[in-house]
Length: 154
Image 1 (tube, rainbow, N blue to C red):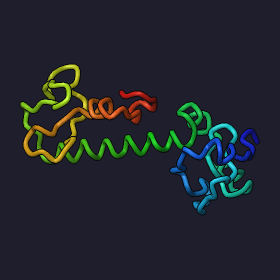
Image 2 (image 1 turned 90 degrees about the vertical axis):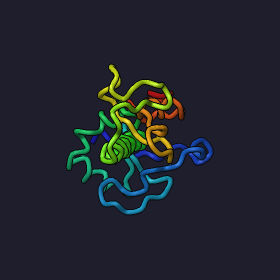
Image 3 (image 1 turned 45 degrees about the vertical axis):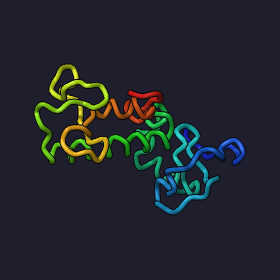
Image 4 (image 1 turned 180 degrees about the vertical axis):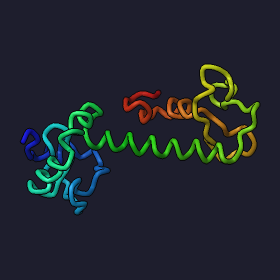
């Protein structure tokens, strides 16, 4: 079994990080902060039996992909970001975006190239077109790294 159990770093070195994955990947039981995890991708489990079961049921095929994405926490955070971004773009499209709307951050028309295929969302509670922005512009302005799985915007 390539993905053996190991304890995470001590609380002192990891105190600034908050776990977003709080359930065993195999059985969904609540996890302690120091729960065992996959050595490669840091997917967390309540015990070795759950890890072996999860490995046999498909984790083996996903482990390297999760590791390349920055580990289990980052992989799942990026997936949640994409899900929320897609929902925000769909909600804005359902409201009906005027054809002449402009991104309030970059000033480009929502139909101008190369951004015409990019999602537009309502970045604030403003009415009309004043609160519309490209999703990438909001991410870049906020300094977030959700898009593209990296840090530093964009």
